[in-house]
Image (tube, rainbow, N blue to C red):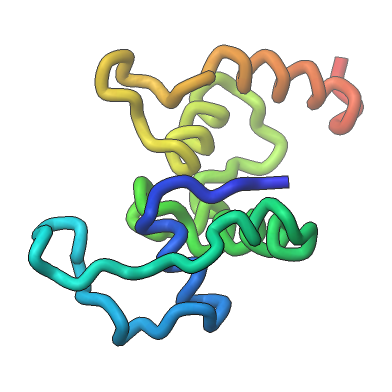
Length: 125
């Protein structure tokens, strides 16, 4: 199950699902407080309804995150590559970079779990 974070990602997903009219708010509303902001009604429906949770995860992966300029995360994938750099690239596409560390948050855990799981799923020793 995946979750969306950030109002820009929620807004884009709400428009995708048809729950929010793209003309009901101003473009780049986050840059100017006087612009009309989107109203995300019932954001909890992403986590309450299993279909919505799975759909949001698939949408996020395909549409890309705001932090990745809405470029599909698939563009960061290197098939069968579980190296530090490959995991870093995917993590950056999903979560962006922490300004203090210069790395995606939780990178070491992601590397450890990805490489551990790859030994089972990819039949690697």
